[in-house]
Length: 290
Figure 1 (cartoon, rainbow, N blue to C red):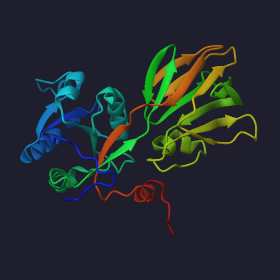
Figure 2 (tube, helix red, strand yellow):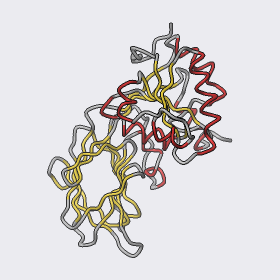
Figure 3 (cartoon, one colour):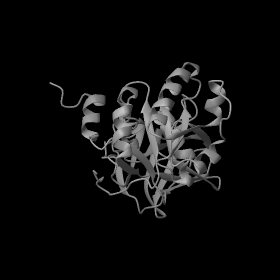
């Protein structure tokens, strides 16, 4: 048996809860083929109800019930599907396995043609679980979890945002420009990267605060410890948008404040034991190319 570095393994691997990439009506045959492979390894497959409706299969299971009944979750799609599931299943602390239907993803590294080999290793406890930091965002007294990032951005092309940023109640910056990205280390290769923010190793624990097209040359990305509480107050009379993981949008009105803290629990991602993050960077970002 190969033991993972952090020695964390699933207690049971008998039932897999599947979630399909939304709006992919051509995914049915792929799902059925993959379902059979799982069943060949004596893993029962349950399908979330939206995916079941999508491919016209009966007996789909409501998402919360799926989380309760499954030993682990499986996403069939890309990184966006996995991020959505990691957020939705956060309170149940289920490990998520991502099967990628496109090119190699930053998060979904198991390809369908590798599945037989992977599941053989998986049943022999030769895999690893990565624990990824998540963010808790408080908006209008509502707590929301973010996997990659929280983006505060202007609503109109002509406008700009003005937000006061505080750490543990003390002002540390005033952001004036197109917006600001607050990212997890996992999200450092998402929108943060396109804004010239730093890339952090995904198992690091830190906040990354990166301005978007700042109206000052002195504004630079900042890396902060996770034990800080960060607040952002909209000091502009124009309403700003809050975008969470590119999936949910909220409004930040004049004098509204959002609070950002590290989440008390982490997302658990199932990976091949031999997966190397720097190989992924090389392939996705063409690092090390001659």
